[in-house]
Image 1 (cartoon, rainbow, N blue to C red):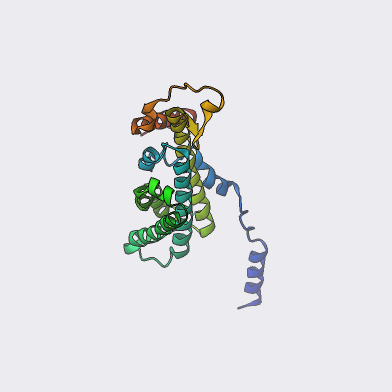
Image 2: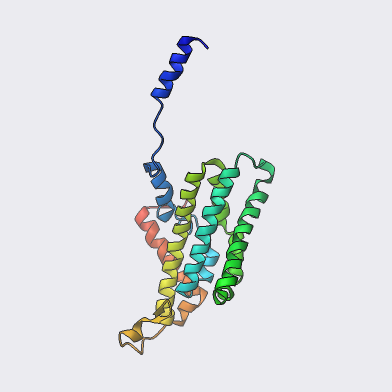
Length: 226
């Protein structure tokens, strides 16, 4: 290589763009968008089954939220690390295998350390394997982005899912059972005759609350279906 070429390479290195900050504006949007403007439940209308099925009480809903966040973050990370090694024709099978392994780990931990909660959630933990939010982020993001960005995407999508189902569970347990995390709110303030609403412990109650949340959020964001 000639001296002139070496000098050109050295100049390029000196003027190279600095590394992107860990929490740059672009990366903040990766986390923030699923919390509001691109929420997986209220905007993309994914993960509806668990939003309706496990939200009667706050405690199982919280456990489900943690499980989904764990699975989506680590599956995003693993797929991103392996993205250049996975043949395109078997990528869905590989994604399912990784998600299934993580879900099995969650299920076994629950069975070992919180068997009562394992019985409450039952098959719904296993259904995380087919949760469209998890598979959608693997296919749409992790397969084409670096590990750190994929972790942020998983956190954003996971927390976007979590705050919606926790909100649904809050109102269902409050008005359906008069409690929060099994603590009797109305009895504690002396309202012993609070008329709990049996509709809230049924799936129709979840539909109603979720519909109101979708309406409020889309009204604020100006989102319109096309």
